[in-house]
Amino acid sequence: MIQKNFIQLYENSFSQNWDLPALSDYTSEISYTYGEMAHQIARLHLLYEAAGVKKGDKVAVFGKNSSNWCVGFMSIVTYGGVAVPVLADFKPGDAQTIISHSDAVMLLVDNSTMQSLSETEMGAVKVILSLDDWGILSAKPLAALKKAHKGLDQLFDKKFAEGFGPEQVKYAEVDNSEIVEINYTSGTTGFSKGVMLSANSLAGNVDFAMRSIELHPGEKMLALLPLAHCYGCAFDFLFPMAVGVHVTILGKLPATPVIIKAFSDVRPHLILFVPIFFEKIYKKKLLPVLQKGTVKVLTKIPGLSGLIYGKMRKSLVETFGGRFREAVLGGAALGAEVEDFLTRIKFPFTIGYGMTECGPLMSYEGFATTRKGSSGKILDIMELKIDSDEPYTIPGEILVKGENLMEGYYKNEEATKATIDEEGWLHTGDLGVTDKDGFIYIKGRSKSMLLGPSGQNIYPEEIESKLCNLPYIAEAVVLMNSIHRLEALVYPDSDQVKVDGVEAELAIKMEENRKVINQQLAAYETLLKIHIQETEFQKTPKRSIKKFLYKLEN
Image 1 (cartoon, rainbow, N blue to C red):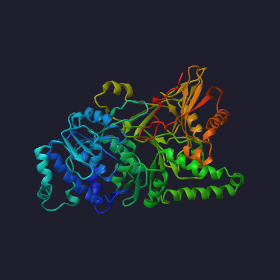
Image 2: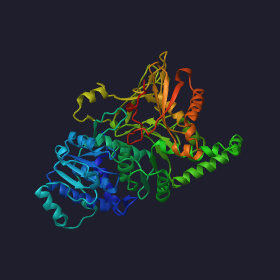
Image 3: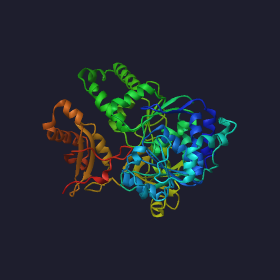
Image 4: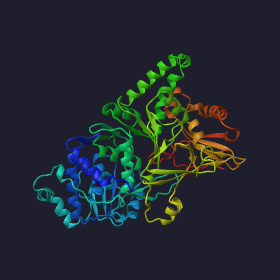
């Protein structure tokens, strides 16, 4: 059990960082200091009490990233409730199914999102509050809630007659063994399950980050990841809130130029993001420079290459605000070519590995000591096993257990038993190898691994990564046809296609790409054909393609 109590982390942080800025919305005037956040949480607790919400009750949060989303989530867990974050990208019908399945008795939701929901389709929900202004959205609100909401100022003043300050921040007693969150996955296999996370799992993630990643009270972060997803919730929100950091929330992820402007405005001290963004920056801004004739020549000259790479590193660091200590990438694999380049110019980045079932972190190592090609080292509060006779050289399924591990899937014992074996090992579904120091090298998903014509293991993710570094390809999915040959579906890079004016020649360009990549692949991995996908691939909130949706036509 983690020694630090999860709820007490925030009692302490709010009290100690009272006057420091805590949350700000990048696109609005809404902001909170730690004291103001604690004040709003105390007001919400009075409403929950009036509405008859009890310790252990489930409360859903469904809305876009915002400061109020964070206040709402924190108000639930500090009350003793179980938070059920619902990804903003879920369609209304799917969201209603999740809210109903979770047995949530209350819902915090954006006004605009609520317009597409049916109150009668959300099971046990009896109370609906607005994430915009904390107003009541229930069609038939409880009389006690209406009365409390109308007289909330008087209720607050009565409870805190001597004023509300740091010493008044006292939250529910929640043991680390208790469930505090049910997070519904949105994976690439198409089936959403409610992951039950204990306070211990979240405390394990936050405490590990506090021990391993340098952040100080008053420093800044830019929240880019979906807060309803474990990665964003734990590291864009829960970790910095426990430290006293000022988090600026970007909201719905905008176009790349707007993201870069936000980095310039906020100048964060730590960056947490998904690899695809860095791959876009590399492909669109850095690769064209590297391919210029003079630069190609100069980078091969000892001494001059260091100067050129140094300038590129400085430019890239400035793009992200200029004062971050490291960029932590997770949620998907980083292309090998991009990783090679970032390593060559000594850009301060590292790659972590996790999944919702571990709340989410399983491996991490700081950029100064991480190892190329790895996804960091297994956490010191977790154990690692590779299901292989030769775990250092032959890929096997990655198995983990330890403090971060979920308590199981909500109301789904069958799926729980299929994922966690009798010895307590979580079967990740990912394939990889390790080394003697516990670094993890991921080779692909066991469910996506393909068998070659002679039984060879083929990891389509590695081929897809190579494809996405070729001209005019933005995204790719590699599939096996009926004769055990590989073919690829690709979504073109429309911007590059238009700039170069090759719309009419796109099929020819893809055939050229096929010949180029086949020279880089083993014979059993070569592509028989590349098909052009007319629309962008459907993705999960962490930008992984939902491959189960795509098949080759016979």
